[in-house]
Image 1 (spheres, one colour):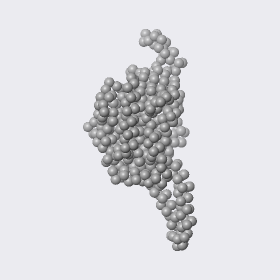
Image 2 (cartoon, one colour):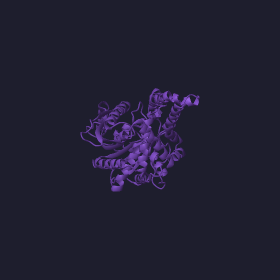
Image 3 (cartoon, one colour):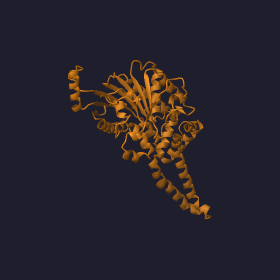
Image 4 (cartoon, one colour):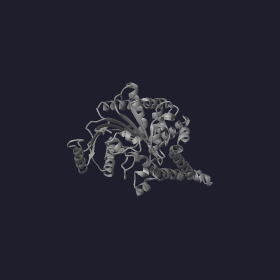
Length: 403
């Protein structure tokens, strides 16, 4: 198998309040963990000035102490002369959507709560919730949780406010019960709810509606702009092109790649392209009845003969559609289906580390793009910067490193 010497990576980040600089810093930390676990050398370059999306170069290679004996063996067998081991150069483009996250989180608390419940109602009316429980009941519970929690808090707040009336006191007593109720909501519930990132999840569902309906001009213009930027990045010559996406970023990626295929159906011809969706949330948006454009773009990607689609899923991650065929459920049963890669977070982390995070579902959901404690069948850094073609992750028996 020919090793990758040069790779272009377009990574569509998940729904987090992080810009490209922060995502690059996290990538560097995770890559260092991977390098230590697998025993290879790593150099992460600085962000390229003026790059949009933010880009940087990652160089991985065989450690010098290991490369020298390998070179000697090759020279002795006539396989090569003076080889110094493998080296892979990957240019990473962080296609973050922090500008959209900031926009959705920009209002005051009341407006964010109202927007969240409006999104909840829209998803229910469009059949999204019914689809969640039909295909992945745990994802359905993930959808309902922040809204039920907030609804309960609002009900308790109202009960506190009308408590004097319920006890038969004069309505004038509501002059103190009203402020007390407000204090409960602001100083007790809101800080408590931040443990579960409730308002952030409200914004996440607002974005899901926007990407499903495609009825917001600002979002649509942003997607068109990202498609233009990605098209430019694809002009660079490379042995392999990896388009990776995490969580909500998979819906963004599907739109952007779909736009490119609509503009230029032969854009990927002659290229080795791997589309890796990690903990994908495409169906979070695509199961809405209005998401006809997103579903059509999923079909375009699936039918593109030059794209190999790997759908990485995890049993212990409740925020993905485990063992659900995303292409078929999007209405394309006759199209080539994405190759499901089933991983286990507990195989990537030490027992103590896994025990510490396993009850935090958002943290488990982020593990797809974080560094490992142990050598495991899946490693995000090796997928995007390793020496082996990304397609090796489609086969659990394939080696992750040359040797």
